[in-house]
Amino acid sequence: MRTMSLEMRVRALETRYIREPVILTFPDGTTAELRGHGDFLLRLLADFCAGAELRPEQVAQLNLIRESSGAKEPGGARMTELLRCFLDGPVET
Image (cartoon, rainbow, N blue to C red):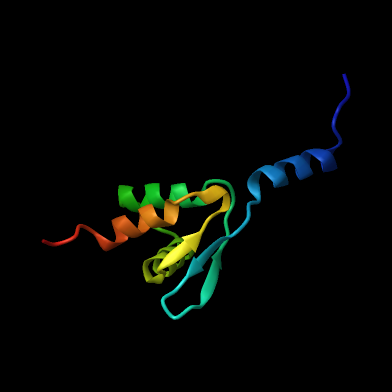
């Protein structure tokens, strides 16, 4: 059986955990990038919904998502839309 070198293992892990950025768009036409490893948006949603104490970078990410009007996520995901629903709260009738 052939063993992988440490460098090859690190590269394999990097390709698994380093993802394309989420590109947020804002009403004025500007954009911003959110970067994270793996399922960082899912963890952000889970922490927010659980009422966990958020780290400063998570608060900054939530504020950007709250202010954004849309997003382009890798693979066509829609986690930012889901987060925005929780951030905005229920619609009053």
